[in-house]
Length: 334
Image (cartoon, rainbow, N blue to C red; front, side, top):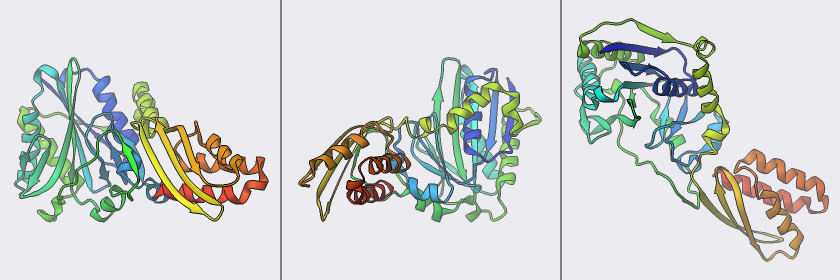
């Protein structure tokens, strides 16, 4: 069995997740392939997760943190340059999940760290999680990827992965948090390059071969049309937000002009149905707000834009529309 080792020089998560899809869907599955990569500050959610439930999308936007949705399942994770991410691809007939974990454990052992497999997905040092994995299988190939915490910013992990409580009845998977640790706590000399080299050596040693590492960069997008196609998908709003499982959001407040009890049914990140109960005397205002919100993206920029247009059309309702808009945006952000 041939070996192939790919290493990304790019820290854009959409590029790296696109590379994963390119590897999984396009590369000939005639070899055991190892892909190593890391991302700039990013929250990566699973295929069936709701970004508004899993993370603080407003704070991420404010801090220029990426949101990425991967093709595989599992929970939300925070990536920064203190994470080393790994991907194994093998022909389905030769796929050996235990071998993948053995390679990682051997690599860590070479760096003086004794890690163990915990359950089906995770690895631990002592009782603290240092790695999580997810898996995907197709007709002729199998795929195993995950992350190793090297020197991740745990404070930011908490900042972005602990959302403010939303009154959401959401379908889809919710993340389960675990006690985590960085590998530098067990070996202060570890960084991404040191760990990557140890993984490459353990991979080659396990299979008894040595192969050259293929470096990937932005020029790869030009050279590989299929890779560029996957990049366009990964970076697209529709994939990152529009693929969110259906959910409902109910909020209420009282203004000096009346009570608002707002119900939004959201499907594919679009407010498909909006109901507003209110004791406001101006029925036209309530109907206009409901009609304006129905059919638009569950997105603060789209909400602002559409309510501003309503204000232009009905200047006599401008004060109430401003009240409503400010409140709704703050609720979606929080």
